[in-house]
Length: 359
Image 1 (cartoon, one colour):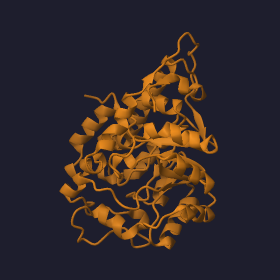
Image 2 (tube, rainbow, N blue to C red; image 1 turned 45 degrees about the horizontal axis):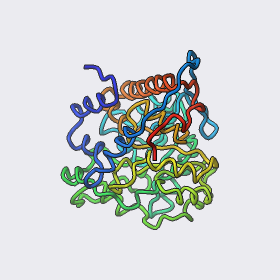
Image 3 (tube, helix red, strand yellow; image 1 turned 90 degrees about the horizontal axis):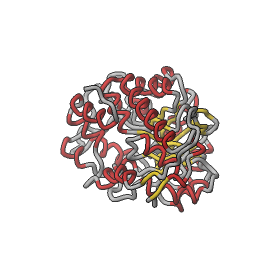
Image 4 (cartoon, rainbow, N blue to C red; image 1 turned 30 degrees about the vertical axis):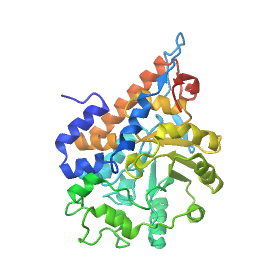
């Protein structure tokens, strides 16, 4: 049967992916409580819709950091797209461009920045992990800017790796021929074959910098002309500090439930972060978004846009570039229906008055 929603795409992807690949994409840390709660939290929020408004013409577009995009739905950074499709991140980037939205390329991509940007037809952000080797980190930032990326998205919640028990059971490692392409010039595309539990966990422990601090945000801003956004914020005090240290935007994220289990669901964390930021920079949110109504709820609670992670990978596994495009089209259509049925014709008309039961 042809998938008609994002849950269908996951079911179809499970049939096509190896157990190792599916479990890697799907997994959360420890008991996966936060993984489940990220979506369940959306289900707890109800919509207080309005009626008898002219909704005959609707505009889903929005502006983010000076870029006009077709809808407030971005492609989140996720690693190792070639586990799902031979074209990997190139296919995902083409689909995002065709959809008129932003692609975010992971540091841990299987295709190098240069190859991905050459295939891009729309804006691309680069997601950054900070390595112990700061020259390697600097090199990533310089390459991203030189290739035409329009923002740096610094992930700040993964300097220690969450224990993902599915990966431990599967002794996760990349198949032969795949590596961390962006770190090949620095010699960090692999780790020793002695990794006992999870290759990726060993990679992070040995190479990522656990001393990362607010001072490093200022260092990062000093080595690039690109706007720097912070991904991994759930506490309002950290949101304030991010703005004070020069962040151009914030992504409310708990790493898809893959880091600290029992962390607060992102949609529950969103309102306090929005209040703390007080309009000084845009706030985005990821985690658990599976329906167009989820997108509307996030906007109603103050997000300027959402980022979509796992469903993009399910689309990629099912039908490559076309599958990713279908996932984005489905969510865009569902969001359009939710907007119309709430009496809204533009994103800036979606406000807190439309939601009941939010934190």
